[in-house]
Image (cartoon, rainbow, N blue to C red; front, side, top):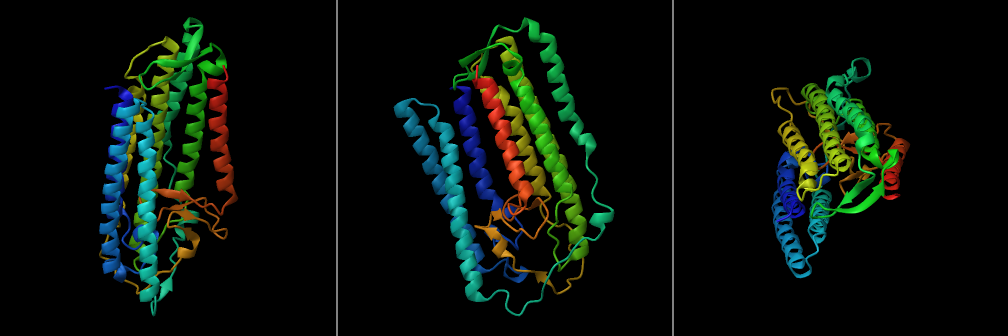
Amino acid sequence: MSAAIVLSFVLLGLVLLLGLVLPSVTSPTVPFGVRVPARHAGDSAVVRQTRIYRLRVLVGGVIAVGAGIVTYGVTGDRLLLPLSVLVLMGVWYGCFFLANQEIRAAKAAGGWYRGLRQGISVDTELRTDPPRFPWLWLAPAVIITVATVVIGVVSYPSMPDILAVHYGAKGMPDRMAAKSAGTAFALVFVQVGMTALLGGMAAAIVRSRPDIDPGHPVGSARWSRHYMSLGAKTLLGLVAMIDLAMLGSSLLMWTGTVTPWAPLMVALPILAAVVVAVVVLARNNRELDGTEENTGLTHRDDDKYWRGGLVYINREDHKLLVPRRFGLGWTLNLGNPRAAMLLLGVVALISLVITLRLGG
């Protein structure tokens, strides 16, 4: 069994597991991206849709995996297994969207916000005493990138004249290019770009707008500060592992090493980092202090800014990142012009890598 097949099954398992457990780690007042009052968090409609969602994801996952295996057995095309991961993610969102619509309908029909005092809480200390950017957590990514540059410069004269710039599913080179600074250091540019991009996102996280519960503003603000700091550190740890994977891939290219396990060697650090990030964020995704007296206020009904419970568009909100409605971490405010600039930067980085690695 090749590394590509093993990696595909690992990814399928992780995506399926994540899809099943996310309702349990999401805030109970935003089930499937729908804002609901705390007293309706356990409503029968929410419980029923959670159960149906998990059943749909499980059945859809089994079908996607089975179809990928059968098709691969018939055609022998290993690309179909990674495509199964994308199919499973599509099934996952489809199940999420159905649950989102059903809960929104139940919320509207039941008048869940009728008679409630809605409010907004703001941590006023964020302007005068914002969470500090964890510079020490950025150091590993910078060190790995610098080390990659040094190793590449030192070994450049002894590199093969023809470099493997792409590997097939069996770990064998299937695209070659003449040695040049562009081809040899293409992944270094990826390291620099990813470190700058995710480092900037980490900075945006510590400056993001927290979703403070107006019913428990003090404890919620304290927890939000902790979670923002933890999220920034987790993201910087992830970029360090991505840079490590890029270093490993560069070493394979620079030395001309050919091994069927090359894809797994490159993907393993990233997969490990993603698993650790999910576990850490999931374990800290709920407010721990339940002793604060309730103010009697509830979150305002702001579903109009969320498309399908996942996409946030609010031109009046100047923050680039906001807490996700479903799952872990943060999402872009697509109503902010800087979000478009960020997405253009990602496209430019991908285009640069394709040009450098495949142009030869």
